[in-house]
Image (cartoon, rainbow, N blue to C red; front, top):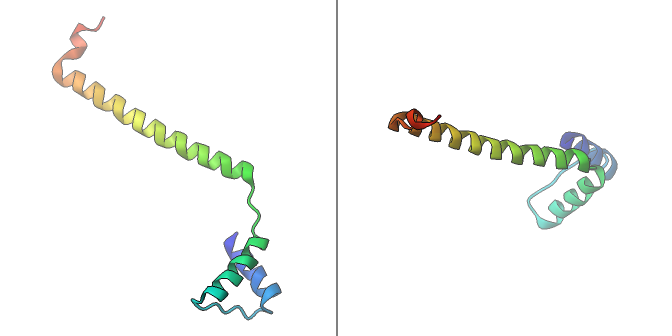
Amino acid sequence: MIKTAINEASAHDWNNKLHSSNTTVDTERLLASLQEKIIINMDTQVCTEVMAGLSAYYKVGLNLLQESCLMLIDTGGFENIR
């Protein structure tokens, strides 16, 4: 997506001669040009962020469950569970 946006910006805004130095003016010009070319699918973005959050939450919860079970095994805590 970014590569395509840069190629389009280079072709349309710089006549295929994209050159950007580290000056503020060049950076702002490049960013302005790229912002016009990149369209974000918000549904996909939201789903990706939710899945990342749930995955992290699941990973922490699973680790906590495993540690609790190991502690019960080490202390013999399962013997008293009916």
